[in-house]
Amino acid sequence: MLERLGEVLRKATDKIANAIFLDKNLVDSIVRDLQRALIEADVNVVLVKKLSDKIKKSAFDEKIKGIEKKEHIIKLLHDELVKILGEHKQLKLQPKQNRIMLLGLYGCGKTTTISKLGNYFSKRGNKVALIGLDVHRPAAPEQLKQLAEKNKLNYFIDSKEKDPIKIWKKYEKKLKDYNLILIDTAGRHNLDKELSKEIKSLSKEIKPTASVLIMPADIGQAAKKQAQEFKEAVNISGVVITRMDSTAKGGGALTACAETEAPVYFIGTGEKVNDIEEFNPQTFLSRLLGMGDLQTLIEKIKSVTNEDEQQAMQERLEQGKLSLTDVIEQVKSMNSLGGFEKIKGMIPGMNNAKIPDNLMENQQSKISKWEHIIKSMTPEEKENPELLKKQSSRISRIAKGSGVNNSDIRSLLKQYDMLNEMIKGGANIDMSKGMNQKQMMKFAKKFMKGKKLRI
Image (cartoon, rainbow, N blue to C red):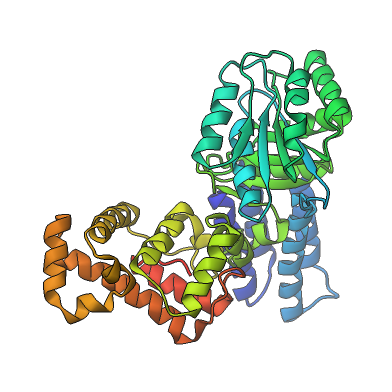
């Protein structure tokens, strides 16, 4: 996302850091590149002008000299960009029942975002339910049902009822069993009186703990007007920006929300259920600058397995009972994150890494073969892969039974050994807490060789 802006920011900071003298020509060149990149990212021209003026003023401030001046300008650039991206504010859940109402216009990605948020919070130990109150779009209840079933989320819909308040009342008692309810509401082409009236009446009946506006990144600076209108009409508490993967103009939506003081809680970065991340201006900018964002990566890792699975896996690792099935589940979990291309910007120093185009395709093929291999094994062989190394006849038997080559089985065993090596090699990884930077770098090097591994 916003790759062009990130590239320019990295070059600008390098130019400043490596310059012997900060003369007028160099500063003007850096400022021009920044202006062009920020405007291409659809950042408000007034904000771009203010940032440019501050950089020029600092560059020629006689009170600041030498290395201090360069450090000062880089820090100023960082701080000002964080400021225009807005304040970091989390969508925190309360100890009591949480009722989060999602609002937005047609085509903003509201229903898809509900399933993403449902998955995000359920993986963090919450009992989540989705309820469909969009009675105007005919496909809305069916879409919500399909997404919920696909991602194993509880849902409540009534495709025949055309009164959203009646649907709510119908399921209100059942919903008491859940600590988080995500509510899908109707959209329109714009926030007209009819939509505003419907949202207000729903809000009065449901009494949501938070009302969240869903907006696509490609609306750019129009985000400011939309956020303002929803804030004034129905008092939204924050925003989720979708389609940050598909547009270079995401900067417009982000900065526009900051101007209206409507905090951005999450950004959507793709079509898969795990393609959502909490928005933190500091770590977001860190990623653009090529400095990585380990915290978001750790949060993404938590999103692909729930707490119970993480704990069970941790116990097996501690007992030395790692099986071949565990290896495949770990590799599949990494694929759920979208592969290395999706996460390399979060790993310090990996932003410019060149990844083979066919890496993901090859990995999917491997997983399919490995699953066939395991189906041809005895329970004893699955739990104790060392047996295969001692008796090559077992490998030949499994290869025939699964229709693969002996080398495919050895590839699986190699992956098993690699995971064991990571565990025994001093990592002492607590899967519920994620990895430290040293572990992450070790992981990245393995990944770069096409040997995907989630630890």
